Amino acid sequence: SLQQHIPQGLKSPPGPRGYPILGNVLELRKDTHLALTNLSQKYGDVMEVRIGTRPVLVLSGLDTIKQALVKQGDDFMGRPDLHSFQYISNGQSLAFSPDSGEVWKARRKLAQNALKTFSIAPSPTSSSTCLLEEHVSKEADYLVTKFLQLMDEKKSFDPYRYLVVSVANVICAMCFGKRYDHNDQELLNIVNVSEQFGNVAASGNPADFIPVLQYLPSRAMTLFKDFNMRFLHFLQKIVKEHYETFHESNIRDITDSLIEQCLDKKVETNIATQIPKEKIVNLVNDLFGAGFDTVTTGLSWSLMYLVTYPNIQKKIQEELDQTIGWERRPRLSDRGTLPYTEAFILEMFRHSSFLPFTIPHSTTRDTVLNGYYIPKDRCVFVNQWQVNHDEKLWKDPLTFNPERFLSAEGTEVNKVAGEKVLIFGLGKRKCIGEPIARWQVFLFLSTLLQQLEFSVCDGKKVDMTPLYGLTLKHKRCEHFQVKQRFPTKSTN
Ligand code: HEM
Image 1 (spheres, protein in one colour):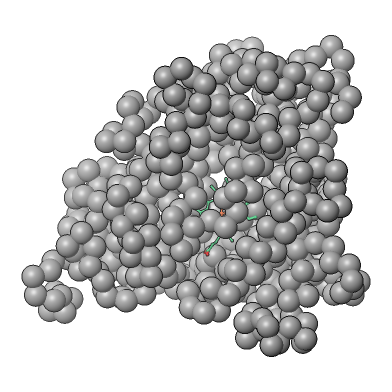
Image 2: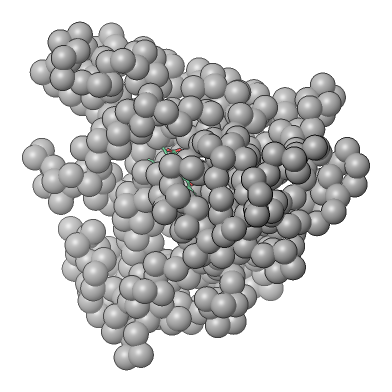
């Protein structure tokens, strides 16, 4: 019946035949990114699968994805109205709610501005280049101390559990002017179990597409709802404290600056006032939520690669020693002078592709892509993992090799190659935290590696098999060890 509505001369995207009622759900349930990458080799960059009875458009290939998300950005900037998304931030999330109109646009701009002011804008009050540098340097130093202390006490440890608190502290400092102890149970109950979120928010979760599943008991769904409640409660308490101590003359952090946006006198000048107040202040939920899990996952994969490839770790450390030395800590301004380190980070993003899909998109109107007709409100998966492992773009894509991003002499990062890595999305829905995330990963890693050498206990191997979810995780590993690199800690 759908066929009848397709304008003459156009066809629907091709795709695998599915079973009645189930569609392709059985082949897509496990490692959805790999299953869809395989299918795209047969059916092409613009392909349609069915999850249950619902059609989903799947985009692959960098050029096709650019065409859709950038050149036809308005057509593809929507978000689908998925069952699980209504539990995220009370259904008001900037990133996950179905809104893509004027309110979304104004909120996105507000979030972007507030984020910038309290992270990478030059800081009038800090001796560092910017607040982000100050926060990350401090947290990375705590982390070094913590890892060494854990070695003393236990001889080995799971770094994820500590990384996640340090990264959360950076975004907490910017959003709330607050930091937490590594043993703070309330914070750990959220940040240390983010897979309770990612397992359900993953692209292709059957319950989002097969309504009958929403009525069956599901442990994953219970954990997900519970996680979102704890998350909301945690943040609401902090926002309430901010309202109680708010003073216009002293805007302390992102929450304060969002509260300021709600003040009445801004009515004339600020389009944002057409947005309900709660929808301004609760933008911190999105910033905090997006800000801790992604960066932690990236850093954690980095440590996994470093212990798997000790020679690569050594090369980064030699570069740090030569360029920065031992007398001072790395700074953000060093980033341009450490090409091998930068190449390692790019290769970590590419090879792990730990955000295998963007958040799902949807079409805002009927449109045509590569000659295929696509109706309004079609759910769209963008396969970033496929781009990062496309043999047309990368030589030996399964090999971990930072040097693929270096110029022939090894003295410079190859910009063109770097821009082919797709992990922050593209176009109107592109990640607003991208610059902050890249700076953070750089400064955490360079600070840790200047001072510490990472390894795993003799005879142990790390398991690099990715576990599918909104972000690809690795199995936790308890067997990490560190050695201090310098006889005496430099003072700076
Ligand atoms: C959206 C990646 C860190 C804030 C996204 C999207 C991706 C992404 C793939 C979805 C794009 C789309 O739907 O097309 C990443 C990665 C990060 C990271 C890989 C770390 C390495 C951050 C940080 C923040 C942040 C640190 C903020 C502090 C957001 C927000 C959105 C978003 C608010 C929703 C944008 C919208 O829907 O309009 N990110 N992100 N992200 N990200 Fe990030």
